[in-house]
Length: 201
Image 1 (tube, rainbow, N blue to C red):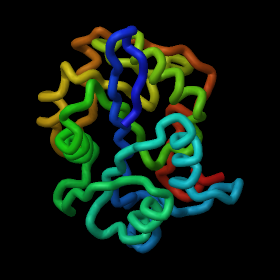
Image 2 (cartoon, rainbow, N blue to C red; image 1 turned 90 degrees about the vertical axis):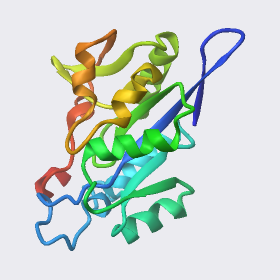
Image 3 (tube, one colour; image 1 turned 135 degrees about the vertical axis):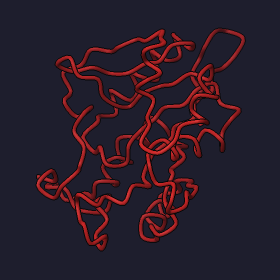
Image 4 (cartoon, rainbow, N blue to C red; image 1 turned 90 degrees about the horizontal axis):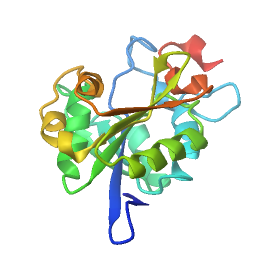
């Protein structure tokens, strides 16, 4: 849980949800290799780089994994990162977000982070959290070259919408209902994910 100052008399509690449950079938159709544990060109694994950037800003993220990700769960546990499981029939983004929100319904909002996006810098994460604390009723997201990216903050006013997400639904449709605060950045890491092995370079 991340606490940010809302005003002099109260604190805002933001739960970071780290989505890791996908099978990564485009990366390895056989399912034998976890893209989250694959090494980047710099040597660190994909998930290791994500955590390196995330933990310095958000010390208590909640990871959502699937039941068969034994190595990923071990990796997270070794780094003292809490995790919960979703079943094999509910591996999509929507179900993962809903599971994380259900596990932390007391939060004032949720920062949605993806386990396969290792290039997002700590400074961007910190900036989204800061703007969220200043705009606690708004959705907050970074944008680069006109393209929205991650992480995305969703306030608790959308809790029921998040709990009802299914399959491959994400929070994108909620942005139409606003208010929406966009943070301009030159960091292309906000939309660079790992889909196939060539993305590791």
